Length: 173
Image (cartoon, rainbow, N blue to C red; front, top):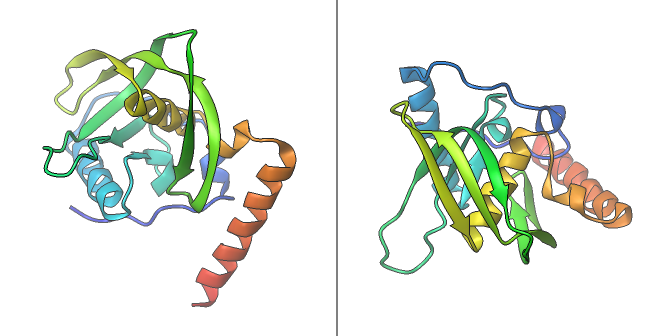
C-alpha cells in the first residue's frame, strides 16, 4: 500500500465530476487500499478518489473515533444517495484538500446509500450522524463539489486565497 499525495484546492480535478467505475479490478482494489492508508495517515475520516487525482467514483471512509474501538474501513464504488431525510444536521466540516479550514455545513441528518464493495457485491446502508455527513461530503467530491461551495461567497473566497498561499509556500519548500 502507498500513501498518495492529496490535491489541495484550488485544483481543477477537484471540480470535475468523476467517472463511474465499471468492472472492479485488482488495480481498483489496490487504489482503495492506498486511499484508506492515505486517509488514516492524513489523518481523516473520508477520502474521495478525485482528491488524489483519480477521477473515478470511489470513496473510502471510517468514522470510528472512539478510543479502543475497532476501525470500520469502508470502500464504496459508485456510491449513490437513494434517500435523504428532511431533518437536517449541522456539522463543522473540514477537508483533507482544504487543510486547517473548517465551517459549519447543513446536510440531511440521515441518508440511505447504495454502492458496490471491492468484491463487487452491492450494498445498501442507512447512515446517520457523522457517518451521514461524511458519506455526503465524499459523494460531493465525486460530483465536483467541495464543502466550501455551501458557504457564502466572501468566506469561500477567503478560504480559497489561504489555499493558494499554502500551495505557493509548499511549492517553495
